[in-house]
Amino acid sequence: MTDTGPSYALLPGAPDSPVLLHVPHSSRAIPADVRAGIALDDGALERELDHLTDAHTAEIAARAAEAAGVAPWRFVNGVSRLVVDPERFPDEREEMAAVGMGAVYTRTTHREALRPEGADPEPLLARYFRPYAAAMTEAVADRLAATGRAVVIDVHSYPTEPLPYELHGSGPRPPVCLGTDAFHTPPELLAAAREAFAPCGETGLDSPFGGTYVPLAYYGARREVGALMVEIRRDTYMTEPGGPAGPGLERLAACLAALVDAVSG
Image (tube, rainbow, N blue to C red):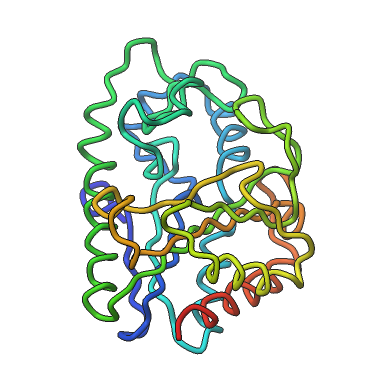
């Protein structure tokens, strides 16, 4: 990724794979001109990145892709979610806008000011959000054209202790949380995920985070597009917040590879 090139990468898998591993929040990169519009000093920004970055999830997805029998495709965000969050609705449907964390964040994890009052989100939406959404839509369309279906597996992580911005932080926080959508997550996909991640301990459902990412062109319209969010509790594979990965990363990558294989056939 460069300041002038795409802010994401589509990494090819096997031509006959329907699976697209989506890694939206693994990067800490913030282009200099975007950094200039963030109100935090350097130390506070680093701490915010520690809290919000799904550290090492791109590596988990890469190792899973290497281990899978049929290599999945990967779509990886190259900039921080503090630039834009590609998984948010860009309109009034987004519940996180209530805490200043819509498609363009205005508040921090601790509900403090991230951007100046009245900052215009449109330049960031035009430069980052919409091109990303269009590229993801095209990536899903390619899998549909090649295999007749697409399975988007969102790869995320979350902190062991809830942060003040969380709207549903009082519920269970299992080692692996599976986020689902009533239309796009069929029972067989959820069952495959529960089995694949059983070696990691308990798998919960839609707590502390629910839902999953589907490009809006297909959302609620095409059942051939399956989707599931995998949220990994960070203490199972890394030092919190923002520290190095530990031995749990390999186990999680193996479990993700098992899920890829289970839904590829």
